[in-house]
Amino acid sequence: MAVIHRTTMEPGKLELLSAWLPTRPWYTGSAAEPRLARVGGFRLDDPQGEVGIEFMVVTDTSGDVPVSYHVPLTYRAAPLDGADQALVGTSEHGVLGRRWVYDGAHDPVLVDQALALLRGQAEPQAQSVSDTPDPTVTVRPADGLAAMTSTAVQDAKHGTDVVLDEGAATLVVARVLEPGSPGDAEAPGQVTAVWRPADGDEVRGVFLTLG
Image (cartoon, rainbow, N blue to C red; front, side, top):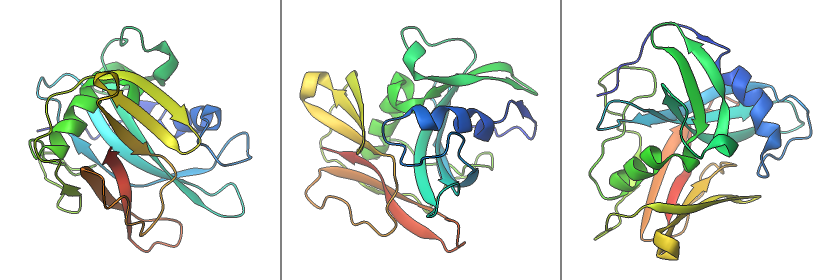
């Protein structure tokens, strides 16, 4: 189970994301610096206990209409080889020291655990409380999903496609969240979760889809 430390990060996560989000092809805002608030998400455990895994939701209120983004992140004690393009930034953690923060769609540890979640072999954890499952995350399991590895990651306006085993399957990471979206009823596996956008009412939407 992941341990959530009650400490500081400098710069903080939202500060890092404020600089990084506008560089993404799926960012819909026009502001050079978005106004972000963390409004939801959950965590998964790394079985090796080395990498922090968080599926974060942030709402940008810099435009006329607030937009909520799904931003999977990983936190590492050292750089991830070959992933310079996925680095969100570095931050000094009050307990763990320097952390390298990555776009989790490009991190094999997060992808492995997302697939484990879709197989029913990983349990979603509360975002801000140690050793506490998150029952609000719902999974439509992918029956018979074999072990796969990420072979390519494609960022586009619709979101991020993680190509598995040279195209045998694709893990679609939703980026601009749509409250109440039923997702793809034909998809073999899907993960939905909740967040609270600017109006404060809890909503649910699709975070991950296996295609």
